Image 1 (cartoon, helix red, strand yellow):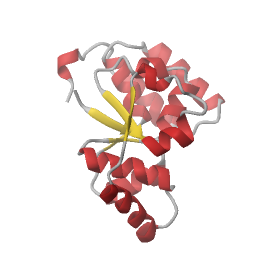
Image 2: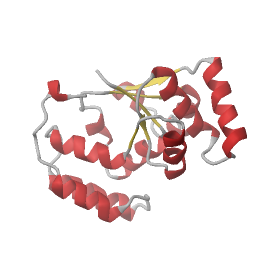
Image 3: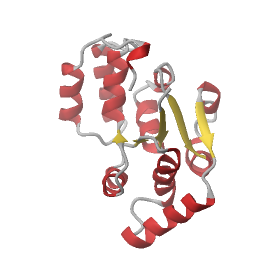
Image 4: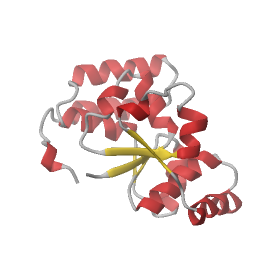
Length: 171
């Protein structure tokens, strides 16, 4: 089963759209760095670990990598976001982020990146939510001041085919 390393941004987006429970119905494993979880996720959403969010420890070499990224590129993205990238590198898996600065850095560092809109399309394609539910969630996210490319998100939702993927179709 494909492992995806998430930053806090995607989790906050999905909570704002009231789709966080649906995330864990997808046939993927979701994980986040232990430090990021303890500082940014656990205080407001301690239940996510029980729902399936894995909390992983980053090895020393990859912590050093996250620090070095800060020296090379500056303080944006944050250290915790750089830890998410470092964990994705450590685990040789995609990074799941909605943070534009982290996305740019991840591409520079040749990491595979997926985001909130990708999650929306997966939820629709696996038949976990309808297009109508996805549009309603997107509207809630906008109302709750989340930042997404709204027109692009609506377009992707409209163009996604409901229920075309089965559990065995995962990459």
